[in-house]
Length: 280
Image (cartoon, rainbow, N blue to C red; front, side):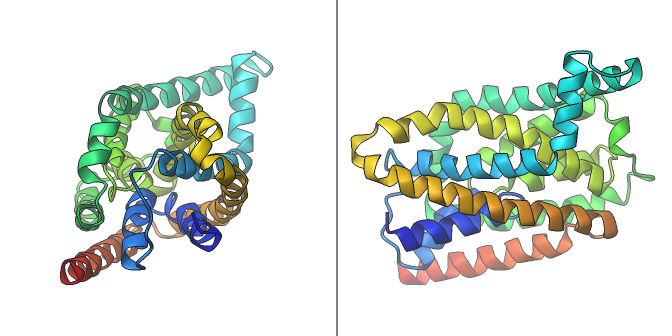
């Protein structure tokens, strides 16, 4: 992979992984729009993307270090009784929300990627992603008073985990569908985003455990390992800035918080699909 192409993909991934606009969709569509000749089905491309996700995971760990430290202290009983109970409750919720995507990912991820990882289909699902966010914003108004993250229940976490499974389809945003799932369960945007970013970490780590060794042992991709590490740092720094921006955004824009990203996805998806059809 050309270094310039790789760094551009890292910048885009670092931003779009956390914005509700689908990083995987952009990774599939953008090279086609720019005329880059990348083999999206090569054995090294997915591990390369996972390396970028590792950078994102480290950024999330850095931003939410207090949450993870509290969870660790709770697991080992290194706090007062109330803090230990709350930390263990949050950990259980994270595990519950992670189980569905782990099961579905192991069973269906590769068939889904083969079917949906063409640029035109990914562009179409960007439109679907935008429409989902718009419909979710409308349905949110019918939920009444929104709850804080502290009121999240096991069933809420499980439903959010089911929503997360949709992100296995390129063009559907993991953060978008999980935030949407939280909001539709009555959680406010800030709390839903907070939980979405927390449950991203174990999913990304699990993907890294599976895919990064392939990059390290693939002789064809061996020369790309250093580039992948550099790009992971680029993606992580971009993700850190994106997280800080989004948490402030959701805190101050409870009403119609997802609308700008939904409109972007619809417009970008339609324009991309139109261009790809004309260029075919």
